Image (cartoon, rainbow, N blue to C red; front, side, top):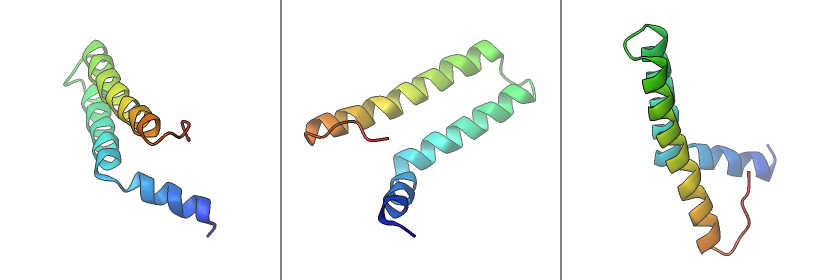
Length: 69
């Protein structure tokens, strides 16, 4: 396994990433079974994703690096 893949896997296993993935899966399930509306799902999902990418961006700015994807 190359070094880039190892780093990517390590980044995906952070608590923040796991929570983001779990919340996405849970709210997707709730939207599919009709427990929440599409509008509610979009609002919740937008907040979760904005927080995730906002903290990633801030982390990269604080370390002096560019946004790595």
